[in-house]
Image (cartoon, rainbow, N blue to C red; front, side, top):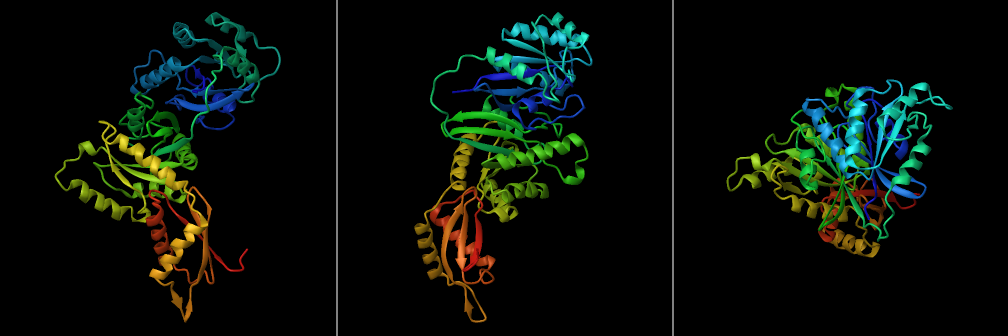
Length: 440
């Protein structure tokens, strides 16, 4: 069953992201003194007194802002409020009660949901300062004094949250989740794809490069199973990343790759392959993740009868270092081939997690070595005694041989191709560990 949702809202720079990170126990949301760092909704799992719920960090609400990004941040916060079971309004004791706090409180009261007033940055222990009591004027009941930096008062806050959570429904355990990181350079349509799949404006979309900063998790369930889509910040060349917030964004994108089962590498069909696409794909390949290469904006490409075939052939040359990855030509704008994307993701995730019995593996090895003899050097021939699978994600095979030096890369590639042909390991890298007899 779906977990209850608790939304953290407030004006910019009151410490929402710091509080969010403290409550979930990890640095998932970017924290910086610059207002407006958080833009989209960031989801994290939280547990207190045996109750599990989803915590949502939102961008700072500026009720009267006319800026494009700020207005979309306000819309994102409104979506979080609409979906929440409980709302935590964060204010700042240092700046005191301001008009924006009153405007946001009035907006929350109209939502009809339980609202807990949190007065942040009360860093000293003991009696609250005199300024604390002016927050009663918001009409939201007794405030909770909290220090999100030091953790003071977070237990009291969570106690209040649990009081308001809906009764726990009895139901079956959720099925297996596949985590999918959507990666690529800026402006290839990653956020548009997530929004198209989820059927809502889950992530802010803009032509301004660098709009997405955090790694945004979106849960999706369809005929192919349950997925967590992780929208990431665009990965630019290192020498072009000079803003400290963007450096955090790049780190978040790399962390998203680490925790994903499958990476969808998006490239822009109207621009074609670039060196940066190769570097982004290399991150997923080195991490051993299942990969799908999604060619977005296919609707904007002028086509004739052979356009896709020629484009695919060119991409196969460009991505020769990861020839196992399937290509899919799609459009996040029109929804073209989105269903096929999930079919591929499920197939690639299964390949990445496949375990092959040792007996079957050695049958393939015997047939492969009979067809193409192992290499020799100065009269000495490579002998492969047997092979076994050591781990999955990615499939990793240990080969026991008489000489590691004789096991040339070309012969490893030959064996890899035979294994792929037999067991259908599409979309996943394969690793070999070579052991000489007698090695520990």
